[in-house]
Length: 306
Ligand SMILES: NC(=O)c1ccc[n+]([C@@H]2O[C@H](COP(=O)([O-])OP(=O)(O)OC[C@H]3O[C@@H](n4cnc5c(N)ncnc54)[C@H](OP(=O)(O)O)[C@@H]3O)[C@@H](O)[C@H]2O)c1
Picture 1: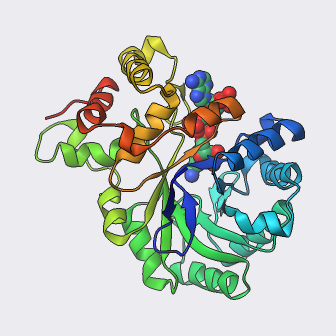
Picture 2: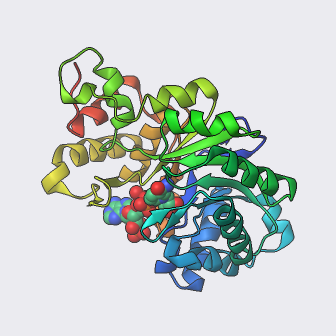
């Protein structure tokens, strides 16, 4: 597994990360098997959030791994905060309390990265800055980032921060390409030319902020898995199968290679709970996808080129 540097941080992370939002679909033995498979395959980066199954995913993670201090040092743990039932909360109190709870559940003294999970229109940048400084100074959090944010909110926040933002976690897959469509269709009077995300891809590239791609196998927002959905995504599945056979890797690995092929240095966060599927995914590499193949997958998902 290749490694990459996360944003401007000192962290060397696996180019593929394991997302732990579905971990509690497994019992402790199954979770241990999945997590040890990830480690064997060279994955060192694990993505969490305080809200994943009400915190139970974080607890199961540390129990299943039997997290000792020496194992902890080999891992890069990321968690998120700020989503509450019915509202978003980026207040200092909420951030500090959420991190303390995550640390207890993860059975660790620090997380490597903390992300604000969603933009909060009531955010006070100075308050977030005070929370981040206090977490950094106490050693509870090493680096900070955001999720689902536009350049506008990141700039607003950054004006008050004394720490860099190292990541923005965004949905990205062959079926969810909003962040690239508009630039490809610039100057065209069509829907695809509308910039809904404020040029987030270019913004992150220019500032060396790592984009993490969440839900690489889901279409819509929560509509389901496009892999194997022949009715809705027949052409995409046909092309992925063909490339999978040609290259001797799984269709999932073709998708992840497609994400890794993009020069933005996107880190896919995969959420499988199946250890065998994970092994297949870890065969992915950006170098396996040629330029024509990249555009072929893009178009097979129904996107047009000008
Ligand atoms: N920042 C955010 O707002 C946000 C939002 C959502 C997620 N996330 C993060 O992103 C991570 C990944 O999200 P995700 O789990 O939605 O991603 P995903 O990897 O796209 O989806 C995983 C799901 O797809 C299934 N799957 C994969 N390949 C399949 C196939 N060929 N056929 C049938 N089912 C298949 C998996 O089933 P198996 O388990 O059986 O393999 C699993 O249920 C999360 O764990 C979380 O860390 C962040």
